[in-house]
Amino acid sequence: MDVSPANPPLLRLRGIRKTFDGVTALADVDLDVHSGEIHAILGENGAGKSTLMNVIYGLLNIDAGSIELRGRSVHLDSPLAARRAGIGMVHQEFALVDEFSVTENLALALSPPKAVVHTPERIAAAALELASGIGLDLGDLDARVGDLPVGVRQRIEILKSLAGRTDALILDEPTAVLTPAEADQLFVVLRRLCRHGTAVLFITHRLREVVAIADRITVMRHGRVVARVLPNEADETRLAYLMVGEMPARQKRPEPPPRSEHEIPQLRTEHLRVAAEGTRIAIDDLSLEVLRNEIFGIAGVDGNGQSELFEVLTGLRTPISGSVQICGRPIRKFDPAAMASAGIGHVPPDRRRQGAILSMSVRDNAALDAILLHQLARGPLLSSTALDQFARDLVSSYAIRTESLSSPASSLSGGNLQRLIVARALALSPRLLVAFNPTRGLDVAAARAVFSALHGVARRGAAVLLISTDLDEILEVSDRVAVIQHGRLSEALPLPLSSERLGLMLAGVPSESG
Image (cartoon, rainbow, N blue to C red; front, side):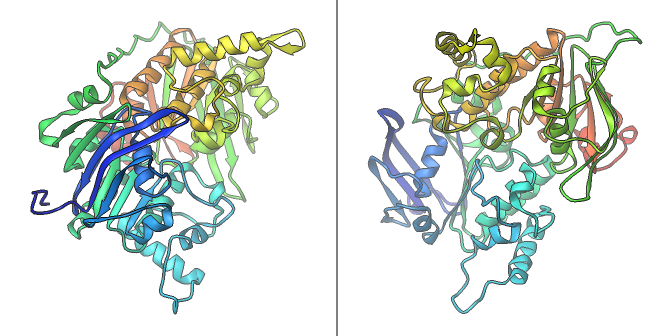
């Protein structure tokens, strides 16, 4: 890769400014992106990374500045204009049509010659060829996308953006729900694309990935570029400091309290059997115990029964057979109200689809739970003063960046919305907290704050069931960990546990051989 002055950039941005209702999102941003490079864009939640990428992809019009592509001034006023110019994008929040099948969603990304007729067979063949090159499993191509797990939908997005000619590819948190092996496979594909001249703009909060794959790194803070570094000039610690300043200390895992052999688990499932859509068995004979003061981690490749287990424990799905007990009391009715009354709080895997009502205000989303609303009521009416104070305290305690409490939740960045959802779940003081990928899309400081909150839940005597596709997350906070594959749970092992051993377990190698 040649980034010398003699080799002009493929993409050049100068003085880019963007405001939203008087709030500055981008302030005089300059950026050069060269053909054949992987250029990482770093910054904490709300730093302006996604806004900048949306400008490049034509989703947002700039207030000031200029954009040049291949040395010529361009006006990218729509995603269609960007795609025609050779710019593709994988969004952090999915841009899929839920009612369409996998094949139909992929067809939307294909631009064949007019003489070529779209057929399901041709689209499926092209999709499978792309998928095999990347090493990602798409599953059933006829499945309705809205019914698919988060990880599978992410893979579809990646394949959509690689369809056709792409000179510049924007990836916004593309590995958030991928296993390390899948991420490595994606990196192989990205390097192959770069060798053919494609420029890759890569947004991630996983600093290890940045150091491993980036050719150049641009760091943003509060809408401005604050640093430009090369990977050999910065380790993860320096990059984290450039992003967020002083880092919160990594919490030491507390020693587990003495256990009695007669202790009643906070959560016990016995021989749980759960069906997915149709007749497929998603969870098969799953038994599990989570104790008070414990964080129990379940690791696994997305699509192995995690979603169905989460839905059972939050009352969205009824098991075929088996039992669930909370603090020794069996759950008789599987619906959200019954689970909340039993003391189960939850952090859903998809913040925009499951965790918030985006058209409602930050204030109303902060209390979007029947129990919280009851706590904030004064007699038969909801106390506006109590609700305001409650929302203000959550926003302050979890450093949620919002223009005001009355702003719609849709105005929050992905990371700030996730902080709001986590804060709301913890405000319930649950007996059991079920958290599914709780730090997905969070910067390193925000993720550390969530980890601290999970430890706080456990220290107060509750239990945490952490379901995650992020091995680093599992290894950092769990007291015990098991792997889920094809709806079955492995033996639970205590921490510390090496990432290599956990990776082998994910690959199906028995734990005793790790």
